Length: 208
Picture 1 (cartoon, rainbow, N blue to C red):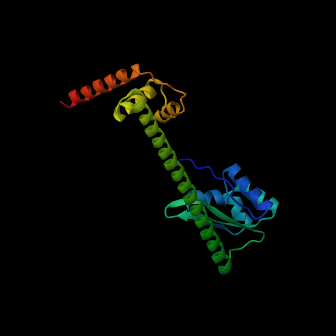
Picture 2: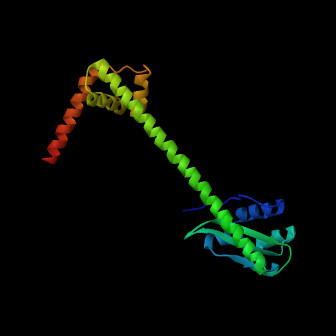
Picture 3: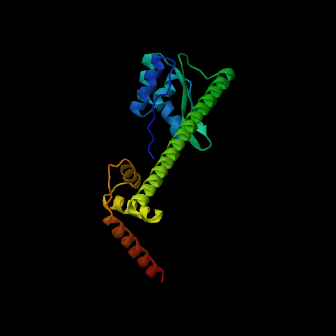
């Protein structure tokens, strides 16, 4: 599966630019941290030049001398990376390393919460749509049962047969029936029920 990375947030125009440059070039610490799931720590310009020449040149132009990239991880899944750029060479001290790890954890939790909320909204929307469709179909069944003097099973068969014949969704056909946009003729009742009976007989024969 191919992942498409994007910049979610930056603290400055410089860091935003260097992030976009990495995505465009396909190289750099944030790309490596994401693809490997491992923390990337480069303390000087010379090492940056060896590992990512294009990134190193852009970093030098922007005044960066060291970079640290920590993956945003959930178990075995990498969601992204948190990147820290420094204007001076050298490793992070313990206090800065702890702060970077804490920021990474907060970012990971925020992303997961957002995804959970979006998924919940999607599921709720799908369930509501299914419920609305079911209500419309039941209303249409009742209307057809009354107007054509047939039982509810036959009314449903009539709806389904019309939907199949016209390559439409049954909920759409049901809505058109309720809105009086569609009138299914009485003659279609016997044809639909006959087709259903033949289908049941075929299936019975297969089972036999």
